[in-house]
Image (cartoon, rainbow, N blue to C red):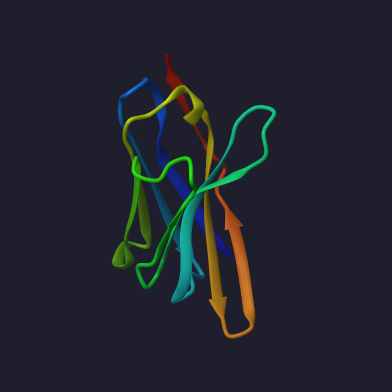
Length: 119
């Protein structure tokens, strides 16, 4: 099992910045991807950003150029820096960890943290 502990989030005015972090612990995989999805009320969950253990990144179209994901492999921690926040970024942000060992792949989810952007 992999446990995910999220921190950060909160309330910020439009145009402001927030940071999220996610620490993975337990039976972690050497090949993995950590990232965030988000879900706003009445909307489907969508990809925010992800970063592999090799450093490859992926971003959702709506956050490209505003959000930056990074990680510290030694700490099994990923960071999401969110700049130029918009009210449309308001959502619950879920950390996700996908580990792979050969043909075995497992995905774990954090409990989520609320991000609210006021206009």
